[in-house]
Amino acid sequence: MHVEQRRGGLLETVHPVSAALYVDGAIRWSVGPDTASFWRSGCKALQLTSSLSHLPAELVAGLSDADLSIGAASHSGQPMHTEHVARLLERFELVEADLRCGAHRPMHEPSARKLDQAGLRPTQLHNNCSGKHTFMRAAAKFAGWDENYLPPSHPLQVENTARITDWMGEAPAVAVDGCGVPSFHARLHAMARAVARLAEEMGPASAPTGSLAGRVGWAMHRNPMEMSGEGRLDLRVVQAATEPLTVKVGAEGLFTIALPNRGAGLVVKVHTGNDAALAIAVRAVLDELYPGMFVPTAWDWANVQNVVGVRVGERLAVW
Image 1 (cartoon, rainbow, N blue to C red):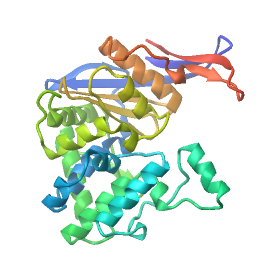
Image 2 (cartoon, rainbow, N blue to C red):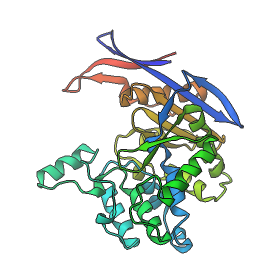
Image 3 (tube, rainbow, N blue to C red):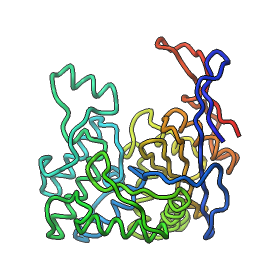
């Protein structure tokens, strides 16, 4: 399978795709090679679960679904996101300077322009990973660990690696992510197994398990705006689906999908890392596996437009 971009009916770019579905203890469907890739932000539900396990039980009990969703977010840096992270820091009796994710411009362009117009620089709150880092720093605080939670040797990161190894059934290679914490490199089939584990931890909508990881998964599903942002693929997939999905985008063309009603985990990888091609691939794979998964709706990424918004081409999946 691949995604083609055509302009004026002529082929412009080809984006190869791999995908794998894990359910009932095995890979039941796949397309493309079982390539290895970095999870990047695709494993934030697992990382958040580790952080939560080291917070006081009464504090965890008082967290809302929206709190958990932004803790697993790659958010767009809109005011709703930065204000929410600021409230969590205050709740944990921390400040922005306690974070170690670094600052970058909001991914939400209107929010970035407003900062520019006000003569302001982005803060660490605008970092798409600031929610995850807030929970990591809180875990280090309450567990009495070193406040520098970034190194792979830090107890929290050791636990994250162990959790991911257990859920995947094999040990990942480890490098450094864009926000400074460890990032995990593994085969797509192993990732799909871990995503299916998240779906199992969630349980079906009619009988959720109530486990800590399951609670994170359902929070992400119920609050996609907190973990994503306006116009983002994560948000659109959840909104358009006809059954519960917990989804997470990772950098460089990775997308994970937990299907709790089916106990299934799906991973899609666009080898070129192209975001627009990833949107087409995710829709095509879900349509192939589960016809009727999406309500009839236009998929914005299918159109290639020029700078004034005129349609000049298309993106399509080719099997």
